Length: 497
Image (cartoon, rainbow, N blue to C red; front, side, top):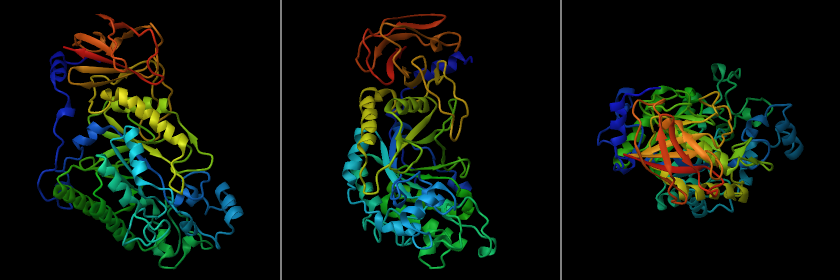
């Protein structure tokens, strides 16, 4: 569509936002009201610059290593494949419950420094781990939740070790929090199990119905007010003890009453003021106001440039977020293409990895991360600190469903994504167009904008080779180099006046 020529010219004249000094929150006190909380800048400048991070689904749910990360729930549903596997492998569920996996979560090979080094080599600018998944297991030294990694299982403060290693390397720390779904909801708090969104289905013949004060806490089978208080208290522990830069929430925050969410946000915002650092909170499907948080699209993304910055969380694996014995994997090329598409539309990517229960990150996952890191070490200029151009891209491949769980697409070498820094536009080809191949970028024609930037110089970012070009009313014409530069996305640096 056409754009106002003056407005676009003015936008091109803007210097890259990556040079702006990282913001710190205003020195004020935030009250637990939406009006007060809305005064916080929910989108940190560091996050807009970072673009790419890595976290891990890891904990007791990694122990069974079967099916997927919903195994802890499905093992309790009679007739499912997971239930049959559980009974055949470990015996009846009235004899061996999910909580009996806890001693088997040993983490003996976990090395926080090695994890953090891998994140750096992969090009991540923020990193972390699932602090607590739906299963009610805390990966930190919790004083509130007895089911925690310091008192049980590994007998180590896993979040604490990783937080130290990540911050020492200059990365930002993310802790994801999935506890909301853990809560079981009952009619009159005792009789009939009503809620099919709970991770653990109530069954009178299984531990999910236990009345033991300790066991029932893991299964979310506790009074609502106790659950809400624990939810808030555990978040305060994470904030006060580890100072995460980003807290990611999974679905079902609708289970938590507004006052608790407001108290959490006020505590987190005021902590960030004391720490003099900008923090980020993410939500899914409108479960927090956009005035206080950024939206996350699990395995999805937008199909156009948006005004609001956003996040996609995606996993390196296929079929499960946590480790399984037959875990399928994506390849580095499709993840790089996904990253380019997300960044071109004003988003960031948080990529999940799936360590084994003992803390080992399998080599095939490492190889994918290192390949991404190699690409970013050469082409990161087009990603880090960049901002959107006037159009996110061009090419034949179109997204279907946008938002959460977007339709999977396979990009071609004719699909191009654009990012910008000041007067430089980066054209990211999602594949190699071919040696000595003529290419026309129609986005540089009058068909797209009233104002067409005058191109001064084009170079191949990976090699520094200068590319000859011409322009006319059909677009920007160039010929690719005579030799293939990259097996993954190919980037041209287009300098304009």
